[in-house]
Image 1 (tube, protein in one colour):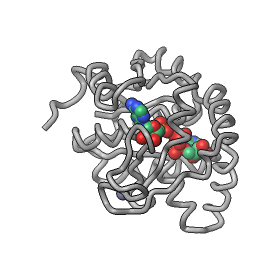
Image 2: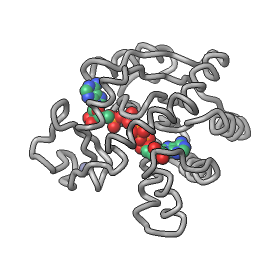
Image 3: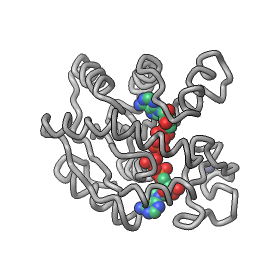
Image 4: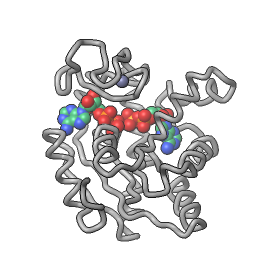
Length: 220
Ligand code: ADP
Ligand code: ADP
Ligand code: ZN
């Protein structure tokens, strides 16, 4: 299964990608997580990436494409992958298609997770992220068993700096301008499925599973 999850910030892409990755035994590949890892290394490149992320702008394609290319070449991605947060504009989508084509591969589906703006603001304002394993929680909707501590790895939960209200507004604008055109792009290729992202996490997961029905391997 080679799947792209599309959707605005806070739609639940990461949450769903993690669940599906576990179900299918293929990696979740999150451009945001890859970028945050580079930022933590505190290099020149990391500082450059952070300067875009802190403002809610897209990081230049060249850096993102390099990180994704390296990640998709790893052995665990041979059986398939779930891309979360990438591609984010048409240029990235075209680069992805070209790279896959060179390897004789293609995407199976692009699933757009649809969530209205009011719900997004609620989700992002309560989001907490594990500093160690990148799992996400929500203070009201998906609280950890112990406040501030990751259920899965015991890591510390933090609030992302770019989840501040003003930056979220900018990210929603960037989504509308740069990323939403990908719905048409994948629609024209016959790869697009749209899924309602409102409701319980496992109900959303079921909707995604039925949208990719016939492509996905049976759960093991
Ligand atoms: P969310 O899903 O909440 O928007 P992400 O973790 O996917 O968060 O992205 C956080 C930030 O990382 C984005 O606002 C952007 O600055 C940068 N980023 C992530 N993925 C990409 C990408 N594919 N292209 C450019 N910038 C990206
Ligand atoms: P994205 O990767 O699209 O930015 P996340 O998966 O990080 O989104 O989810 C954003 C926030 O919303 C997180 O705090 C997460 O726990 C919460 N969340 C995810 N799915 C749902 C859902 N179906 N209902 C309520 N909250 C959700
Ligand atoms: Zn953790």
